[in-house]
Length: 367
Image 1: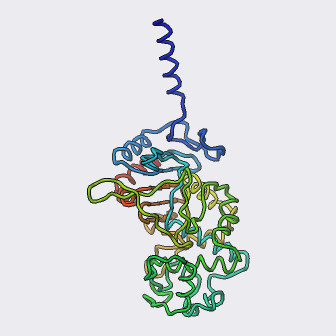
Image 2: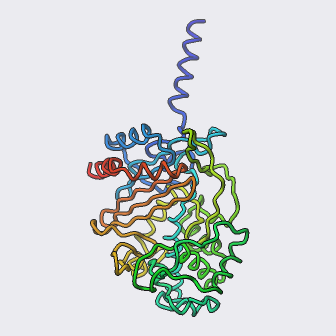
Image 3: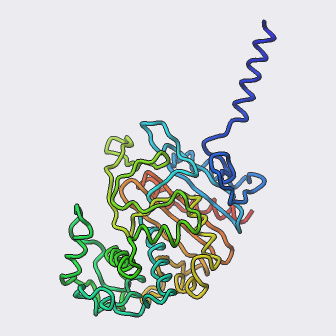
């Protein structure tokens, strides 16, 4: 009897040790996904363990993927995707990426230029004749945040965003500066670019993105929200901390397609990152334009990408909406990538603003 009991205990321990985990250092080749596009490091480095420990100790809620020249060094989820349902974050968890969407919008515009359907130096009035300020600014100026348009629309909540935009196009925008002179970050400009993609391509924004970017890259967990409060099994819920220190879900915040509106995973975004080194989505000339310095005043912005003026070849962007934070950094000379998605927007932002976490990442790259 005692022998049978010991045998049963040993079998249970063996099952626990060999069972697949919800997150790991190298999840890209795990059983939870049918594709295996990633090369994972053969061993877990001490620096990767230090980052993992740091994120756990600081109660990071989200996922992170770090890769060096096509090899994934860390790919792991932390905290809960949905607390009430006890669903943890993992590398296939879907997050709202907020302003990282701008890089996709800029790429789509440049694809349309390659197809001969527009040119970035054209005035907006050529394609949007109803826009009263359209003859004062070019597509290029919208892409590089040089249009002088305000950061946001005055109205925060609209049931029909398409109607809102149409009404706005037919009124005079109050320009913050003369177009082409000063960098001024504008979500309004990227809303107009999203509309321009639809006008020129003849497709809805979400359909264009799916056909020309997501499907060619097999980004199977990436989509445009299209103002629908989707509740997918793998989709994270956004959280914030209230005045009493408790985390609670945030109300769904609708993003305009263009400046925001895309949801994705760290693994899908890594597929996109790798594609930007090839001609799969766009030619080298087009890709160079995306990452060129188009800002005459600060020298720090391309088309949908921020430029690190202190480190050659480093481009990044971050996004924030209530409940969600996103960040991507690409060192194109070393082919090093960091992708962070968090479903606790404020805490995710604050954590990755700390110098310590970036020092740990740099140490990992230098090992």
